[in-house]
Image 1 (cartoon, rainbow, N blue to C red):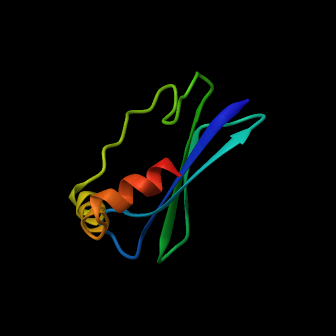
Image 2: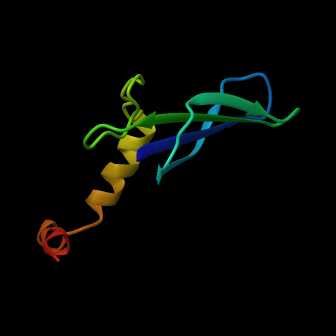
Image 3: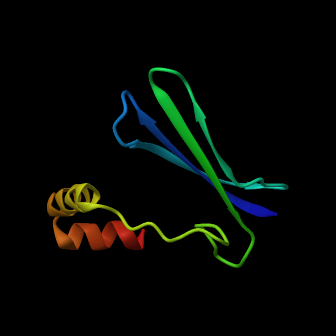
Length: 92
């Protein structure tokens, strides 16, 4: 059994690809690789596979750290909650 991680990115012009989504699932077989689909708007799909204990980024892949935009989003979400209420939600 493999853990499959598929990263979806897109580009509307010749600029760098922008993050769209990520999908994780378990599969009987898994083939690593990257593909580009489309003419004007290009969709970039890249699949990573691993089968080690608690793996989630591929046997040969590098760990990806979130960029500043993700950190701002997380900060804003956590600022909205009262710490006591948030701790209660985690316990449940």
